[in-house]
Length: 163
Image (cartoon, rainbow, N blue to C red; front, side, top):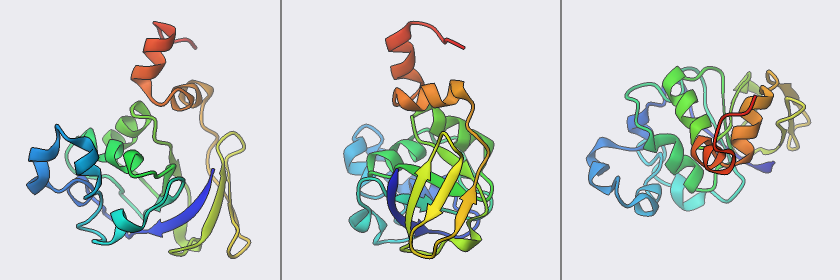
């Protein structure tokens, strides 16, 4: 995966990702995706391109269990979320929706850096500054779910969960 880093700080909540005032758009996900992360960066949705990365600090995705939050991030074209730490429910919802979440030290990544990510190797190369960052290898079962685009497409294809 390759793309540009969009850097956010600590404690980006699901309300920053999908503002509660837009709950009426939950049945129109393409429209909701046009507002993704607008409370953290009003220009994000208009600037993000297919393959880019959301880079957070500590406690990314805290708050309610809004399943729409990782889904609209993915729909906006983001290929993965990188953060120092992530709320457990956000992490699980992201994997279920086919959005990789990589736990790593994001201090050395700057807004706008060009990144290359290898999920199998657990490696992030910052092509802008030359830094090489690692993250824990993603278990094969999770890689399979991500490869199929999420848990539901995986179950539809295989009819069961294969280990």
